[in-house]
Length: 254
Image (cartoon, rainbow, N blue to C red):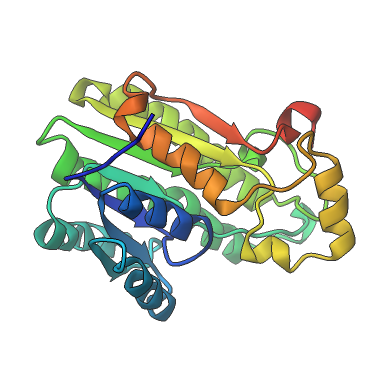
């Protein structure tokens, strides 16, 4: 099955690096015009330039915690790149820490991006571009942390709460917007070889891999493959689903 997005415009939040970049790269390689949205302006510009060798890509700087900036950014993307067919929401803050030490400011920082910003980005794209055309596909980023409790040092009340919110926002949006022919799904990655995990101690990485039936952490491009499937017409009857991509760790209790 050859999944293509020719003639379609995709927005990828958090697309400057990591899994978001892998999603943006696979989308542009599959024929989509891609708007890379990220708070990391300089890195985003470099990433967009790299991807421009493969197709039409533009970068848009946006802080998702500033809700008032989301609507105008979406309007600018539509004006410059066309109506939005696909929204991939990889932007997020990965934060650890014990619940007894968590501050209100830390809680708000994570929730404002991972849950609040994600919702209002969905809302802006749906209202401006998808409902008027009665078509669209959204793929949010949840996490296994939003589906189960996590062991130290991965435990984090605010991160887990934010990703649990993504799970429920995805399901609710799928129900509400189905009448507009808009599909909403999410991926829930487990351990991924991201910049964050690469900085963990070697013994942690070894122990984490040992708990996964496939005996290794996921690669960003493996998450991107699942995302692009959900975003595509190949998944035309799939909505409201949370696709766990973790090498079997969730099943085993990782």
